[in-house]
Each structure stands twice: as structure tokens, then as C-alpha cells.
Length: 219
Length: 217
Image (cartoon, rainbow over all chains, first blue to last red; front, top):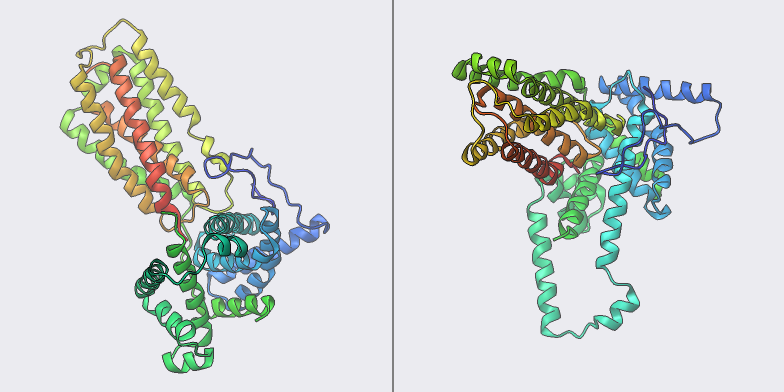
């Protein structure tokens, strides 16, 4: 069975039970044959990527960005969050690329991952919105009086952050320390740590995500 | 950094990190692996309890046999569905696969309570014996669920809770199937209730815990 890009559906326990084969693409108005051809190309690229072909992989990921954005938009992700979803999805694709079966639709596989990441982004954003008061509300409700309790709270927050950073894997911790805390440039951090700038960026991205998850986690 | 170059930069980095990967085995092959573990336990239980008692019970009260067949079908189909849902892009409709087996299992078990005849060489289950069934099903379901979760850790279930429910159903059905081998008393309403409680507990715990374990960031 092959599925198109609208493979989000409504999911039961995690979102719903769509009927067999209800998934159909509505991403573009390209003729079907052209669309099938481009999917066949992506399937071939992914198969090559699984074998370690970097060029095919990079072309595939670049080609996937529009599809991911389309899925995220359909899930109701706000425009300013779309690129975060794209980044998260690309990282997930990289991590779970071994789960792709080259005999099946690449677009359906990607759409399922993008949809999951979009839902995660919406949930995470919703949680943060509930926890963070708007500026005007914050000023009225929580004036910065500089009293002892505010100071204690700040100290406590700093302590949590230090603990969370200390528990990161070494590569991620190093990226946060060099780029975030010491505010070094990528080149300086690369020289200092002996890692390439790309690895530092990925480590920083993963570290920030881990910290967000830990600090904004539901109690 | 513009969004385009931000994506390009990440793509370059991921490209640089690329190494060949070993593809995930098809769901049916991973299902077979888990079923082998269940089969090994069944062999041990058969060696300990023998096959004669079970055959005599099943010959005298076919509803018990049908309930056992239903539990086995549920076990196989729920495990297969769980492995299928571990692959992104597979339809959530896979979750319906265990339904026929489940209906047979529940229906035949319910019929067992309605008949007057007691299965040969058995007696009606006492409250204490029915309690033993509860512990048997829970006791075997936990390691079988853990094994399924372990086998699914390399996968990426995009519906972790639904997958965890299927894991619970597969392991509870497997435990109920194994129980048939050493179930030396006939089903009563109390016994059936204990089975239902045990199966519900296993599915509930899996949904609560398994979903989190399967939910990879």
C-alpha cells in the first residue's frame, strides 16, 4: 500500500484510526506521473543514503524540507515555528533512517515523522505558553521587587540550569559552555575543542532541546 | 543566520555524519523472533505439566479450546501490529488486526461460563485459584512486554501509546495462552473476571509506561 503526503490523519490513542488507504497526497497540483517520479527519486536517494551515499542524502534532505513544511502547516503549526519543526524532523530522519523500507513510500514515511514532530512542537509550545505570562501580565502580576524570595528563586533557577547542563553528554555540554556561556564564536569554539563547526552546531541544537525538555517538563 | 542557510548547514552536518545503516527487519520477522521466546516458555511449561490434561480439557469443553485459539491469534496479531506500527508511515488501521482473535478469545471465554458442564478432570476454580491466574498472567506478561519494548527500541513508533497498548494485549494474550497449558481447573465467572482484570492491568500499565519508554525524542 502506498500513501501520499497527507498521512497525518486523526489518530486514536495517539490521535485516531484512519481507514485503510485513506491517505492521499494533496501537497501540490503537479501531474500524478511527475509527482510519482519525484517520489521514486526520493526513494532511490534514501536507499542510497542508507548505504552511506552522502550526496544522495544531502539532496534528499534538501528536497524533503518543502514536504516537511507542508505537513507541519497542515497540522496547524504557526509560521514562526515551521523551521523548528523542519530542523527537528531532519534530525529525527537522520536518527531513524534505518527504519525506512525502500520498497515503500518515502513521502508517507517522512510525513509520519514530520507529523509527529509537529504535534510535539505544538504540545511543547502550548505548555510553554501556559507557563509563561505575557509581558504586561508579568509586570502586573509578578513585579520585580528585588525581594529575598525573587533572589532565592533566581538562585534556584540558576542551580537547576547548572545541574541540567552538568548532566548533558560531554559533546553537548562542551557546545553549551563554549558557545552559550563563554559566548565564543563558532570558529573560536572549534579551535578550542578540536571539533568541526558543524558538529558543534548539532551538539548545541541537541543540548538546547534537552535543556528545554528538562526545564519545561511537566511536573 | 537565515532559515535557508540554517537548514543547509544542518543538512551539511548530517551529511558529514552519515554512515551506512543496517535496515530494520520487516515486522513479521521481528514478530517471529518474539514468538520464538513465547514458544520456548510454552515448551518448558509443557515439559513440566504434560500435554494430556490440556488435551482432555479441550476435548471435553471445546469452548476452552476456542478461547485458547483466540488468545493465540490475538497474541500473534497484536505483536505483528505493534511491530508494524513501529515503522513510520504504516497505517494506524494495523491496530484493528487483533480484533477478530480478541472477539474469539472473549466470546469463547464468556461461553465457558454459561455452560453447566465442568471440563473433564477439573473442578470449578476457587477464589484462591482464580487469584493464581491473575498472578500468572501478570507475572508472565511483564517480561514478555519488556522483551517486546526492547525489540521495538530500534524502531520509531509515531503512535507510542497505541503501540504500547498492542504490546500489552500481545503479552497478556501470550500469558493467557501459556496459562492454558497448566490451567487445571474449569473457568468460572470469578476466574474469567480475574483473567479480565489481569489483561486490563497489563494493557493499562503498558499504555502508561510503555508509551513513555517508546516515545523517543
